[in-house]
Length: 258
Length: 282
Image (cartoon, rainbow over all chains, first blue to last red; front, side, top):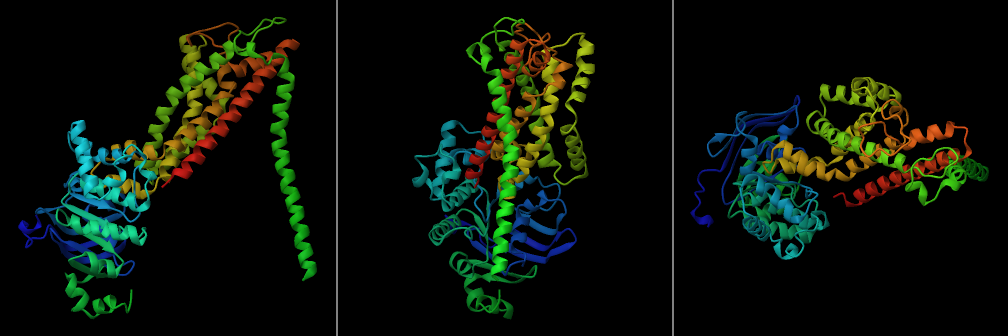
């Protein structure tokens, strides 16, 4: 299914992006491309701005007064930083999964039904099908199919995170943002999520922030390396890890700093 | 070295004793109150207390009309105060979190929270009783609602602020509008905390006497609707305790015992609810 996707044009294009927390500038003229059918990893040491960049892509930062972005982020040819761009429409296209699982305090079924019924008019049977489909895609269906009415909080951490992924993809966004989605999980749960991310790239443009070098190497096709609020280097993950152009990238991927 | 150790042991024993004594002093009053009301009210404490009307001096009876009146007026207060309080608290926590307006509203709410209840009684007297021309259960319920309101506003505000920011961000990231995020996701996450606030507010208003003196007054007889003066436990206790009749005194003690037990149970219940909520928090 991915093979027919036109990879030459990026799904998300970031150009000259500056970002401010109040008066403090966290991103300096960042430019990056995120392509369909690929997982792009954003990596770098703590405080390099990788999470900040991710939080610009669905403008979740705008919840906080004092945080401000300037520059251009285009999605389907439109600049999402334009104040006139509708936030809810943007987030319908750009879903996000956070570091710590964020299940809502309601049943497993309702966690998915809430966004689904908000965005689409579905009959009860259509709703059930969509919930099942999303849970299957998130590789969670077999574990929860008999307890859809149970509280989402009764799930384990790894299951909760897959539920959050299911919830994000249920409304079929174009882009899926993952903010260190496995850093709160144990190695087995991490493996499952990584396998899942690899499958999801067929249908979504996946952007993943990770501080874990090995994870970036395992999961992504492209890598953006950031340092101190700037993009140092970006390109195919193989090349970034084996023959980086920039000496700083080389130092980072060989473990000399970060 | 050894003397230092002995000294520490001694100080420890002293502080422990003082702490225990302070605890016993505090709890002692509660036990004393419960014991006194129970013993003094024993002669009136039976099933008839809950099934018969307030008696004339020298007759047997119960406090049914007073319990019913208190129940009805508390219910009116809950129905008015809870939705308003939850909405206002949500407005504060979700829409005015760090704004100047939010700070002003919180400050005003805190003043209302600590306003003397007799002032609120007088206010409702002017607002309702004088306009309508007579005392009523509605006026009593309204006075209690005004006392309950700031408690609910404050707990709702605080409990919503305790909901992890990640849940708010996650809900917004699904393209849900802010009101839906507040109502469907955040209020639900904070619901046990909000319920605790309502229960504590309920405990507070169920013992209020002053606001009812000016609004519901009292009623020696059964009143099914809150359209006229209504009997209620605190004012009946006041009236019977001030009376020269020994059997009325016993009813006052019994009423006081039931009220104290009710408030104690509400407090325990709200603790239990909150304890359960903490265990379930993600």
